[in-house]
Length: 145
Image (cartoon, rainbow, N blue to C red; front, side, top):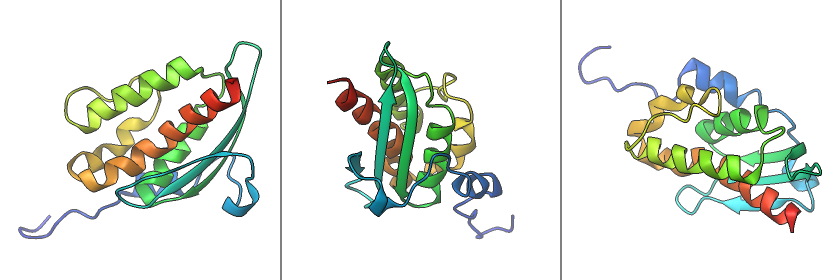
């Protein structure tokens, strides 16, 4: 890339992921779901889950209003949420926070997160990336109550 030209904010892989969010429903139609909003960027998510007898995700539905990083993260979260427990998701959230802060490796327990590496230098996108995982964790915890 020529000197003085910055890298584009989104890679082709991130845009592909953003366009492939599984279990997606319109925001207005996903009632009774757990909703979270990013205080830094305004992205918001709704996630509804059904759990099996062991407290693992048996069914997921999601609604996403976020930038391409948040949408890509929601695609990765949704694509690998089945059969996950609250403990597994909490571990991933912690590992993801550390990785984004430059204090750890990409979470190996959740496939595909390395695709979001271009956001490591874009701190303003970190909350959007964390939002789907934090919302999934909250949804599991609320459903388990």
